[in-house]
Length: 243
Image (cartoon, rainbow, N blue to C red; front, side):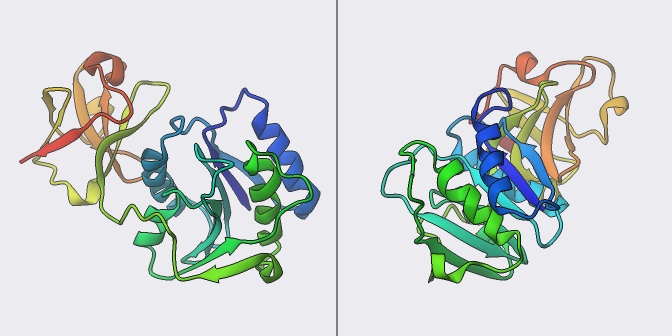
């Protein structure tokens, strides 16, 4: 399985081109999953925490093609990461580093291969997609890689006390893992404290609350409403745990 995680937008011209590049090199039977294409634009730090939370729901041999790459065309490295049996392909700009920091088993490689034609602005199609396709066959193409001691841009394993994603309902996902947050604690967000509830139906309509979402993150929501609009928050805004 190849899972696509980008800030390209599902309605733009980029995802289709990247899939064509994948299909030219991957097996015809390899599933290609659109994991998410509305990752916050250029939001490497938020994306790194979102990817680390989402990866748990994919099989151990999944190849993640992860492209949030504001430095495309620069000197930043293009890399392959193997973390606990899963493969990740993308830029070495911090995007893959939370996954790497939290994994028990890690190996990293620099992509040394370059295609005959490499766009200055679309490494997702020309460089990362072919590499992801080759990895999907089950073995890394070692003649196109150089093993390294680790990623150059580390963000660390710690949680991120910020909004990292707002879904189309207006629910605001944070980079805090719910397992580390007591249910008795409140979440301070945009100058307002919201208490824990198990799920939407446990609070009156229109009430804001935080809960453990389906991928294990602390999320702020409003029963029947738009939490981001109600609270006036967006990606990058800080949150705070109040005991």
